[in-house]
Amino acid sequence: MKRIIFFLLAIFILMPSDVVAKKKRSDELTVISYNVRLVTTDDGENQWKYRAPATPAMIKDYCPDIFGVQEAVLEQLEYMDKHLPNYTYVGVGRENGKQRGETMAIFYNTRKIKLLDWGTYWLSETPDVPSRGWDAACRRTVTWTLMEMKGSGKKFFYVNTHLDHVGTEARQKGLDLIVSKIAAMNPDNLPMVLTGDFNVQPDNPALAELNTKMSDARRTAVKTDYRATYNGWGRFASVIDYIYYLGFSSCLEYETIVRQYKDIPYISDHYPIVARLVF
Image (tube, rainbow, N blue to C red; front, top):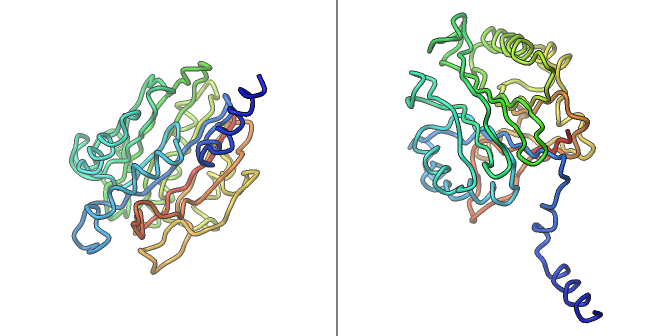
């Protein structure tokens, strides 16, 4: 018996630290928000074809139950889908509601989560059809899902978006529309997560109403950091990416993922962010 105990203890001690760290509570939900930066040759040595391997490496390292991406085009979605076999995704291209243009896709671990319903709307005066709203430079969309945890049966909503980088009115009214939609779609007050690149800093007035309805994981997590989420390939530093939540008992940890993978200097011009929520 002593030999068996010693053998098991030796295995535990020699086990990589990341494997030990990935053990988590049964009532925990790990989420990531990640602006992948679209495919363009303008990025030179930082273009997608050179940095693509870093993305599945990061996801396999953090093992999120669910994650939302911004700016992803079909080529990137297909790459992630191929290299992350435990995950699948939902979402449509913002240009035509099919496959054209950037997609605010939501990926989820099919071993842990069951998809119950999902949809997309546009941040505009006509949200049910492909459209550009207010003073926005681009069409902007929201992807939402209703999910169920396979182990516990707990249900939750996950919402993912990317606000406009130019239009001040579009950002404000886009967030107002999201807040309104969140209230309307959730009469049973289920837990909800909102992730995205909001293109505003934390003190921007556009976030005022949202801050009264949901909690910012960065501010409320038991363990957190205040690193910049936008890096601009090392040229800039600002906080514009967010994980908001409501209906969860707590946020155990928030982290800006700044580590390198596959010796690739930058996984994107944004750093992914991760939160560990408790039902």
